[in-house]
Length: 192
Ligand code: ACO
Image (cartoon, rainbow, N blue to C red; front, side):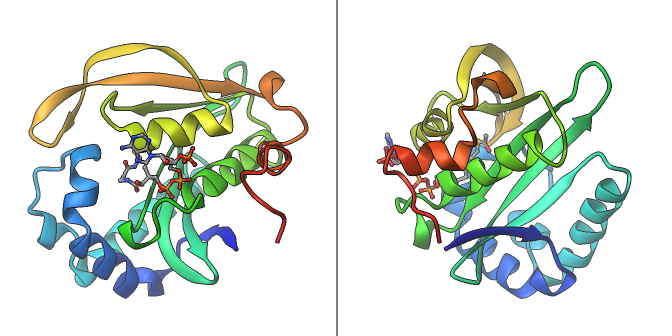
């Protein structure tokens, strides 16, 4: 069962263990910070990361979630730059541990995140950016119904260079019922 829940201070050990072990799986797709990977993901780094996420969440700008598979921490899904008013938009991003890839976890988590955005958060649009080379993430976004809107040239500093990213988005009008129920109808997920 895939579930989203808020990040916790006690997630540090699992977060660090997975992020350090999965460097090769994660680093090609994530924004650079200028910090050494192992230092940035040491268990002692988590309280600062956690506080930063919670501070943004308290301001209403970010919704930082842990992805759980059968009750175990297996990744993160973050909704950021939450904007209300006439825009009612946010971006969404995610990662999952290499040990659980290929089983539909990210797709289910993304659908849950999208439904949260269009439901309780009352957004109108959710967007994401993804490197064209990231075939797995592009497949995840497509399965949940994100459309490609264009190519952002030299958009983000990732893995040692300014990388082009595809901008993809979905608006509430494009959802038929809910993103999760659409996955279930298409046989890509089942209700727990
Ligand atoms: N080429 C084409 N398709 C691929 C490839 C590939 N090399 N590798 C995997 N896929 C497909 C799978 O077949 C599957 O599609 P299917 O269900 O139609 O068969 C799909 O990609 C993966 O779907 P899930 O199983 O739901 O995804 P998973 O749980 O494996 O997680 C993810 C995918 C999140 C991209 C994971 O590999 C990961 O964490 N990667 C590193 C970090 C990352 O790239 N994060 C996303 C950054 S972009 C963003 O956040 C918007």
